[in-house]
Length: 192
Image (cartoon, rainbow, N blue to C red):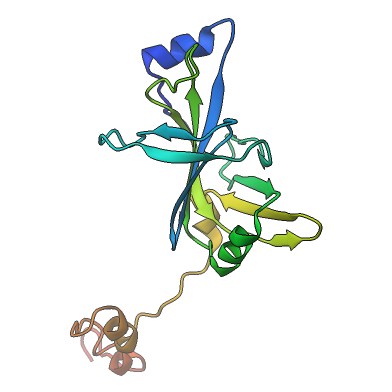
């Protein structure tokens, strides 16, 4: 992702002798947003700057996020998130979710000397969730893959240019009503 900008305070924190950072991740599931952080404690932070802080839940060191890849090639990049030691009540919730196509965002937040987030975390990756297999053994481990929107580039789009399809999408719109009649229509062009 190009065009990332840092606030002056975040740039100064990044250039300091001791750099303190945390990752903030937002997953937009059907049942509601899930906010997690790599900090060893829950973090209340108002990312939207609307005056209401959301609670970003800690993974208590039981979560990992793969590195964020970038390149000059026109290709899809992705991130893999793993969470282990999942509580029993969260397993049933995870099994009920269908993450396919839901949005996910990852921010890098710089911290000050008091471990408070410096305003203006940097969005380092935004994409769509793909798969979320859950392995249950002596402990439960969930692996969530998130891919960039460029992964949609080669996917075949559903839908046809027919009146039936147009009625399904926009009832009452008659734009394609004569499409079927024009299929094998012989036209006389010019002087005959």
